[in-house]
Picture: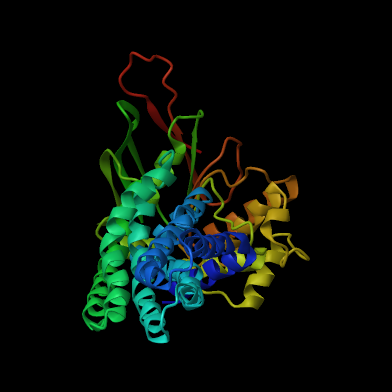
Length: 221
Length: 220
């Protein structure tokens, strides 16, 4: 457990020392979301309709941006070798890295989304549902992304391959995440969608670190 | 303690080396020699359990390493080519994180003492990216001073070190051996260490038509 905490602490420290990587993804999210109301015009009914999809798609793309750096730096400087030689299981250390990745790339999106949602004339209640859906959904993005990042580790042109690999896997999170907000706007209640997102998260927490670890071991050989 | 039998390594279709046999008891060291590309690093990575071997087996305390992997890793310290140093962390943070990942958290006083002994006094809080190559190596080597591991596997530990650091490292290795530690390292230079030492030469293969490189074990 000490090693897990040390990994989370180290990755947060590294993110704090190199703020540009975190801020780039955050600004990308803000700008992409803000372009839609500007491009479509001030029709509130239309904006309310597209808001969930736009916010969620932008969140997927922003989460993608920092993924290829998830294991690449550790692979290059030999830290990954040391992690795999640790008496602590590698899957636990990988979970630590995923947690740190979510804290630096997912959580800021969750906190920023309601502010950006105001541009789409979403009701306070819908904004709340949006936040909850992102809170459940963005960890899934980090977890699934970690599998993709581990699989494409050391592959030339891995960045593009990573998006081709991971984006299709994000589809369930997108459907239920955006669906939750849409259902709430339509007055149907978001409970079902949010439960499914929670189920995806539970599955991801259990299986993704294990799958990413298996892929990392192949990359290390 | 560590017994290796018939170890072989393949790279693609080529067999780099085969039939590597040796055993290492407490207080003994083994220097692996060989030309560039002879498979020194591959051998060390296999011994550390980072890469699978094409043939042969490795035993730790009489049991196959694959069966006692966790126990083996808890007793192992491996320093590879890449020093596992984060450029944006200070020497102190690097050392403390590395120790925590290796399962032996360090308090700040111990870590600082190790960095001072290795010759980084006054540079403990500088980010590693402003340190020179040799100083970065010293940060990595500071892990040796804080290690309780029995088996040290060091890949080219003398690279980029100045004369003073080389003799300091030799005395650290001697201390480890006199505590009953085991040591395997690669180096192109002749190294004088206490205890019982062997040299393993991963043979050059001058004749490409010959299927297997030769390996001779020469006691020092």
